Every structure is written in C-alpha cells, then in structure tokens.
Amino acid sequence: MNATSAVHIDRMSNIYNNSVARFYDFVFHDLSDPRTRDWFLLPSPVPGASLLIGYLYFVLSWGPKHMEHRKPYQLKNILVVYNFLQVLLSFWLFYEGLDAAWLRKYSWKCQPVDFSNSPEALRVARGVYIYFLAKLSELLDTVFFVLRKKQSQITFLHLYHHTVMPMISWGAAKYYPGGHGTFIGVINSFVHVIMYTYYLLAALLPQYQKYLWWKRYITTLQMAQFCLAFLHTCQLLVYDCDYPKWSVVLILPNAMFFYFLFADFYSIAYKSTETRSKSMEGKEDAKKAANGYVQNGKGKTD
Image (tube, rainbow, N blue to C red; front, side, top):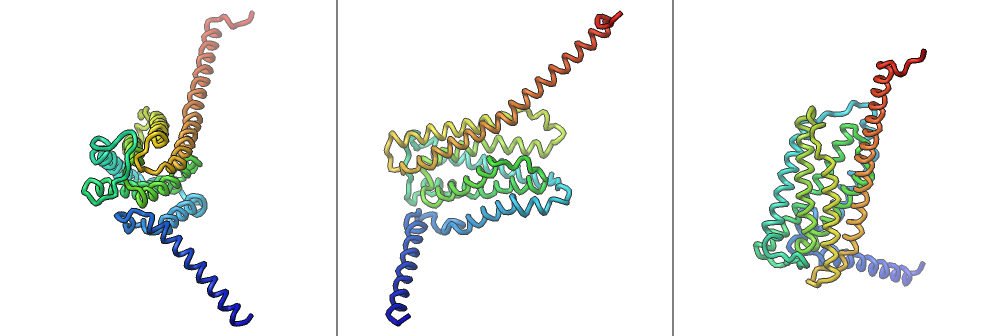
C-alpha cells in the first residue's frame, strides 16, 4: 500500500467518523429540548439502555439461575415501603399533571409543548422527567418477582410493558417534555395509584388478600386507559397545534398492542377462573343432589 492510498483511507475514515459524530450530536443534542438535555440520564441513550439490558439479563438469565436452589425471599417490609412510595409518587405525578396542565390552560384537543423557561413550562417539564424516573423505579417490580420466585408473573406483557415505557418516557423527557403527550402520563399515574394501593394492602395484610375483590378491575382500568390514549392521540390527525403528528406512528400501535395484551391477560386470569369456579360449583351441586337422592332411599335397588 503506497502513501497515497494510506492518506485516502485516513481521509475516508475521518469523513466517516465525523459524519457519525455529527449525526449523533444532531439526534441526541441538537434535536433535544435545551432545558432538559443535560438532566441526569438524558444526555445520552447509553445509560438508560444499559439499565434496561442489565434488567433483562437479570430477569431472564442471572436472577432465575441465582434463585434456582435458594428459598424465595419474603421481602414483606421492603414491599410495603416500596409500594407505599410508589403510591405517593404516582399520586404526586397525577396531581402535578392536573394542577400544572390539564385542569388549567391545556387544550383537550391538541396541545403544543411550551419550550419556554417560564415557571409553568418548567414545572411540566420537570413532571415529565420525574415520570421517566418513576418508570425506571418500577423495574423493581420484576426484580422482586425473581427474588420471590414468582416466575409465573413475569409474562411477555409484563416485560414488554416495563421495557417499553422507560424508553418512551425517556424520549418524551428529552425531546417533548410537555404538551399533548402528557395526557397519557396523567391517566397512567392515576391507574398506578390504584394498582400500587392494592399491592400495598396485599403486602401489608396478606391474610386478607382474598378480600381485595377489586384486583380484576385494575386490569379493566388499564385497558380503559389505552382506549383513552388511543382516542386522545387520534385527535392529532385532525387538529394541528405544532405537536409532532409523527408521534401517532409510535403511540397508536402501542396503545392497541397494550390493549390486546391486557385483554388477553384478563381473559386468562379471570374468565378462565370464573369458568373453573362455576364448573366446581356445578360438580358440588351435582354431588349434593346425588347424596340427597341416595339418602332419601330413592337411589336404592331392591
């Protein structure tokens, strides 16, 4: 290889490296919201992606192997504290979403992001960012399942939900911390207040868990939130308020996918249980009837 060829290769390498660096800076710096781009975990996708990869590795591989020959941890006190904190955090996010935006000056049809440095706009941006951090904290749900050897609860729905939501909320906090998309976060936070309250009571009073009859309605509430998210996002196809219309390409398919996953879970978890329960009741009634028939002498042969 002569000197000319070496110079040519070096030049091409520099052009390539500079192009990649410029593209990276453009996507992860120039396009991001200047108010939030330097906040913890937001400058680069690498830390967040590393957390999710480590999470999936622990849940799908290392964790189950580690627990294979160990007794499940009870974690009662940890679960009580964790669920209590999640209730408080979800309630705060729900309140912030209503008080800072949706009960005040937000449009229910189409709401742009306020990229100013006004106290109101920064308050909304902060709420979106904390919502993202909350999605990361919820990864502990699955970690606790592994440590308690509750592998049956780690379904595809559970993993998909806990993996996708941090990625979506990271993008919202980095690029569009406010506006139309915050509606989904407000609804989701309300659902999580109910859900983590149930988990708190179940951890605090396990002997009364069978009396917490409203567990099934949490799933119904989750399905309803995806219907609301779908309908609310569809308005972007009709109204124009400078909120990116391309977001419907991400939100609508996910809302539909989540709805059908939760509907399938509901069918398996509750309708099949009802069918088995009715079948058992029918068998018990038939048994009682048969016993009464024999006891009355009508079933005897001469």
